[in-house]
Length: 203
Image (cartoon, rainbow, N blue to C red; front, top):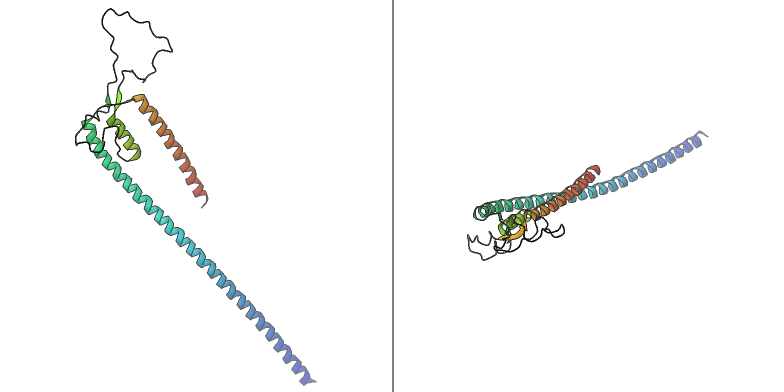
């Protein structure tokens, strides 16, 4: 009887050992599988971070190089345009209406709808020269481009006659263009600020 009880107890212990061993093996296998899966996910994340870091570094380097190139272009333009300003005026007198001499009767004063608008053709106010237009456009684009015959390819060094000619644009025209450019810059600043705020909020 005792021997039978001892054998049953031994079998029970063996069964419990098998169950415990199976549980431990299953738990270990599950842990190993989870760790392998986690390691694979971590590797993918690290790879993605490295890729984005490289892309950000390339973008930063590209921006820096473009910025330096633009600064160099503006420095060259500044030197070139300072010399041009010494050789050619920015404005010249506008056309002056000359009244005929003799016994010509004085015409009646024009009505309100017949008077020319300020800055219109025939206004005797100053007008911009081709040199001024060339420098204005260069300041906007950082690229020197000819205005009419001023700065045209093949022009001899010091050929200032063309640059001192009237461009047919008044100071009012320049102001209208400046106002448009300023408004465009303000709109760009607003868009960029919203983009910066959006990116900051996403962090």
